[in-house]
Image (tube, rainbow over all chains, first blue to last red; front, side, top):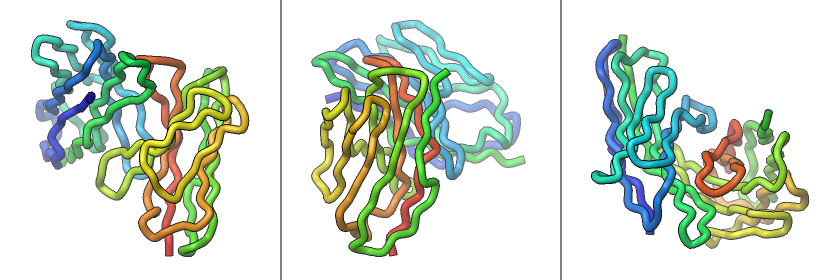
Length: 114
Length: 112
């Protein structure tokens, strides 16, 4: 079946540091890929998405590129801020076989310190 | 634009009591609807999903149930809550395959 693998964290960075959160996936079809962010006590918000190979999703300074050859969708940001402290979820949606489900990674907690 | 409403935001219930959590979506028709549970500091566990009125798929056998009485309404229920039912419950919707899900603000359920 489909799966998403990401580091659990926590990842602790100083403000203005470079961020990378790795995400790799397995899927039976040709999935769409997503990154979600969850702030404490809130629901998940869609951060960015990519629907085909070599697509780059970007939003609020975050970027991720759909790499089919390495089955990866790593999240990056050049300079993190304290306000970026949250849990980040990588996810995929694979419609092969008529599935209606989205597969999520375990979530990576990011702590940014001033 | 589409919006999703989930209530209540927090709920404290005694063991053995019933449960009803409601989720409604506005601004779209025939969405796919989902219920997830998130234990403290953990990832998401899919509980139920629905592709249409009256159509419910259960992912995890447990003492919870779901219903979809109207196109944009999704209800999570239990007849008798267990301590293990504590957690953060999230409702989500999406328009179709390979589209992103959109989440409600969640319900924090504590069982005493």
